[in-house]
Image 1 (cartoon, rainbow, N blue to C red):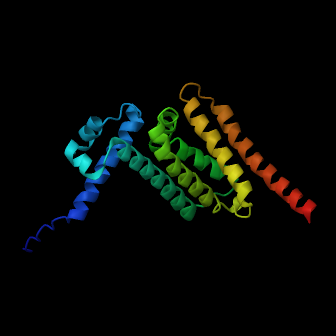
Image 2: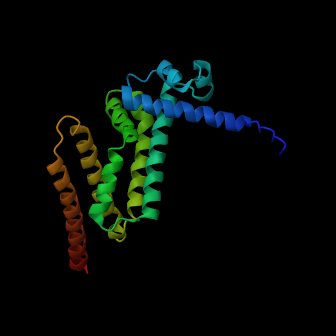
Image 3: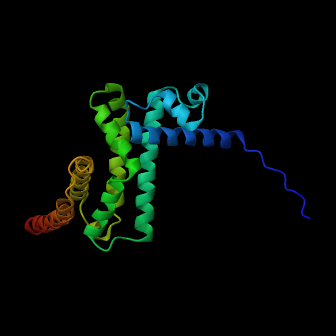
Amino acid sequence: MDAQQPVRRRTQRERKEATVTRLLDATIAAIAEAGYAGTSVGEVCARSGVSRGGLFRHFGSRLDLVVAAAERVAAHHLEAAADHLAAAPPSDLRAALEWMRGRHRDRENVVWFELMVAARTDAALRARLSPVAERFFTDITRLARRVPALDDFPDETLHLLVSSARNLLDGETISRTLVPEPAVEDARLDFLADFAQFLAVRRTRVSVGGA
């Protein structure tokens, strides 16, 4: 019989990382289900099994915790997009937009909607979240460069297209909870793909005209 292997004890760093992960996962779940206002420290502690003292050993305030959760959601979104583009590059722009829509409707992404709405009237949240959102949106545009149909778009044109698609799909995700319009939603992807083609043609005409 093989001798029983001793159980390796986790390092202090591993224990800290595990606790932080539990707290962030609980915060994300709470915001997605109960909204920003309903995500209290007590709610996060109850969901994570971490005491209030344990929470404040890792985060100085509720705001620190919420911003860290937003950063985690952004990182997950970007990782998923990068993995998708590496494993199965979209066959065309419409396919890329359809995948992008799926990410916007992902349960975890709801956290961004909740926080953006809350930031409108919460100055402290707005000040902390704005640079996080700016980096997130910049990284999304940078990833879009990997879509074959977009790889030669000028930076300003790519930004216009990606930001327009992002804002449209954000609004669609929110409004469809009250008034779903499947046919219109499907046509919207065609509209966005056509918009990209318009930008591509316009870019070519400007380039030729300026030559």
